[in-house]
Amino acid sequence: MKKPIYVTQPHLPPLAEFIPYLEEIWESKCLTNNGPFHKQLEQALCEYLGVAHLALFTNGTIALITALQTLRIVGEVITTPFSFVATANSLLWNGLTPVFVDIDPESCNLDPDKIEQVITPRTTAIMPVHCYGRPCDVERIELLADTYGLKVIYDAAHAFGVQYKKESLLTHGDLSVLSFHATKVYNTFEGGAIVCPDAKTKRRIDYLKNFGFADEVTVTAPGINGKMSEINAAFGLLQLKYVDDAIASRGKIDALYREGLSGIKGIKCLSEPEDTVRTFSYFPILVEDDYPLRRDDLHHALRKEDIYTRRYFYPLISDMPMYRGLPSANPTNLPVAKRLSQQVLCLPIFPALDFGIAESIVDTIRRMQA
Image (tube, rainbow, N blue to C red; front, top):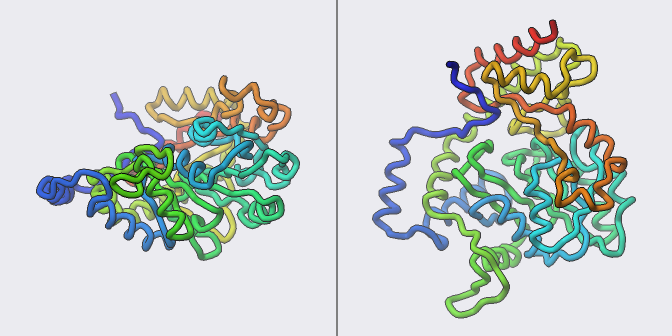
């Protein structure tokens, strides 16, 4: 039996290099609560990403929930139906009402033309997603936010290291939230972070992720336990040494796919975003009507070949039971998102993916034309 090929696999540096970190943690007996590796990783990530302040979290979902608490968001939040469910779940956990808006067919991100149409007196924030690490229209979203007095929290789970117009994409909005899940470009096994603009905001975030404690006896807010452990932080420091090589490998696979798939009728690759240095989080294709198989048929056919693609993102969040009763979840409001959710298929892309295997995936998709 062939070894299955999944969409993503974690990049793991040599185990021997991790042992000294574990030994240091063992000797210090400091396992969590803002330990030395935690502090080192926050600083190292600020420097690598080109951001002023960053707070580490146990995962990206808790970071999203805390970001909303940080800015005291209430009422309605405009967001995308075309994302991982954690985006909208973070709103429900805060007692907020998601308002879904359709997406742009090229970027797969929130369509700014649709945002203004759904702003009401209850709207307090916009939560866009940099889908697949492709930048949202940050300038137009900022203009809308400024015009209507709204906060902007970017779900940047896919956007680690992405640069837009020669600056970190993470500097846009009031806050940006990262995921360091094992399948991401950069991972800490499990983890996440909030990128924020100033020390005062970071201090509030740090209180909130530690139950609201400002000091040993002072609790300032109803916080949560969102702290990253020393083991995760240590692994993150080690991973940071290899992340540029990992991104370079992903870029080569991305280029191989683009060249190999370019001549296959009915298979569309997303266009390269302008003014952007990507880090190749995912490789989505669109299976269009003139390909002989429907998207789901291709997905299942590839699985029989032990190629485990993913339908990111299907179903739409707005089609899930906890959201589909919302007025904004009506499919007639979301025609582009609905169509793309029925066409999109993410192919395997990770640093250890052999180029020969990537070529065989392309050949399999071409063969299934016949």
